[in-house]
Image (cartoon, rainbow, N blue to C red):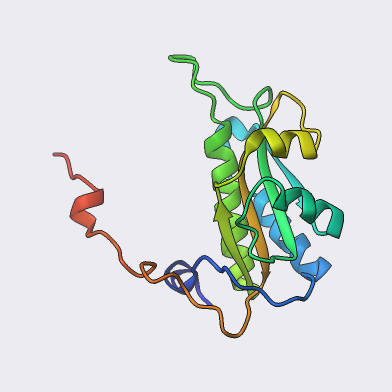
Length: 171
């Protein structure tokens, strides 16, 4: 599978097989997140791997969007480790964590592991359930697993705005 196929064929999977993700696949996915580019190469992304029943129950307590996935990656960033833009104090952590999350989703798809980027979660419950320090900011949940044979993309998945709507070309 080439990168263009990954970009055009990947979709948010909301139905998974009841099979654990192989350790080798999970490790390869995490490696993709580790190798993500970050501002100043500060590498503030922090990923909490959740695959045991007790941990998955903690995820279920903060979101209805696990969709039965057997693996959840809590993608965070350490705000004390992120690069900060000197002009306005903007912290790069959210962007850095997002780049890592994208790379992990693309690698997962290449390995045959489906995923969904979940933003619909209660961060206070997540913080409490996983005892996150004040400096650790949860950016997203990546729910993952092997795609169920009857899974399909959401109805609107293939709708895309034209380039002219999302990009402007300045002289």
